[in-house]
Length: 279
Length: 355
Image 1: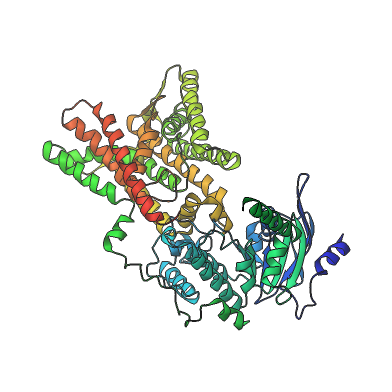
Image 2 (image 1 turned 120 degrees about the horizontal axis):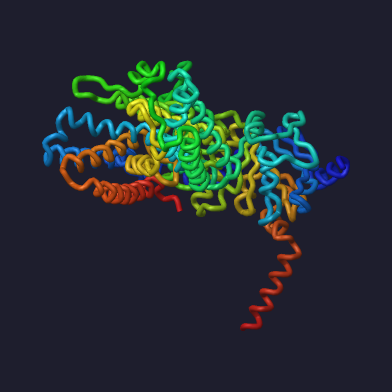
């Protein structure tokens, strides 16, 4: 099984310069008799963006849920810094430095920005019954971290729900980096956003990469993935369709591959025929 | 690598920060509106002044001893219910729990012959166990807590009547004052202080409100409660132990209700099997009037206390006015509806542009 997985994984992959931060090798996941993911391999290096692309139902969600500890892989290996890891819970994944920012579920809208930022990892002072959240430090840290992402927070008590979609993603990304994420998984961060907001989020991704974080960027939009990606992986019906490094594939090829190549040609052909009929 | 970064940005010099120039500075009014208990405080002031002006006794220290007493026995569970509601759950069994705990303590003390203090400790443990069962069922089955605790409500009501009848042959447990340890327990839980006869339960109420406010505003658990109620999936994703928080809240609610049950039982030296039935709605009304959202994630402990104060003032105020006390239900209904409307508005402005 492993041999086969490696063959599938390295088929489209160019030789690497340095050791990858996170390696996924021949990972499969079954739900009953449904094959959600079969023999998927990829890797991400520090300071690089690996884009995982695919249409709806391609297995993107299953893939990130395995990496973030929500599901456990049925076959294959996940290696972090060369060491084999397997996650029983999101907390376990977080502990080795894999943080996931889920599309709609990254923040709690009714809670203030600073409470959201530290939810689950609140800094405390004092001991025993007097142990309490260090609110001034929390607010200060949150401001500094968001400033690094280029956001000037005026009011740390502002509910996150009043922020724009892009800013909410930024809060989640800044939080993940602050808490020592080495690998940042972004689940469709741009899918619900407008053009301008998407651009802002893409800039956050670049900023995270510049800070030495390995980013896994899940998307079904090749136009968003292509400008920021260093490595592209396309999933199709639960299988790895291909894997390219930056420069090996153009945006148009990426679009073509994602839509299933031949299928898109067929569709274009059919549409043209329909159009010529109506004329 | 850097060429990719610049390729992303427009050709104009990139902005150093993404400040939205349309965002105005936060006004004092916005900050006030963000406080969940603001509406309740204003309503409490209006109601208090109204009855103080229209009746002779309401505004006196003697009168205040009356309405703070009612408010305290509602307020202690209401504060716990508020925390539970902020955590996104309901407990309909909290009212009948006051009866169950009083009866349990009474039976342990009078029939089994335990020292009163031992009976009190056992009662609190038993209440915690009932709360745990509530919480565990909600967390495991993922059923709405509304249904799960409705079932608990009827189970406890049945047990209260059935077991009490089977043991004592009547629908009440009496004679608590003859049990050893009663006098000291009465002082702590049932007695009164000052020349105006303020109930000691008022002090418990204040202490529990302060404790709950501290937990919510300043502890990690408080942050988790908001997170769990606001968005349980998001909270779980960042590592909040959602089941533990929820079960803990159910246990806290049951134990707060038990505390009031113990207080009332010691006060009267007897417990009726029907004690507390219907009070769960008063707790929920107090929490909602105090700014808790029915959908969770927002609210305050002080608000719930102010809500309880409003109910206490209304009950006693209506009595002092010489009106038929049945009007208090109409009052409760109207004030609940008003509170929900106000909360709905506040929530929408807090969630802002979200979809």
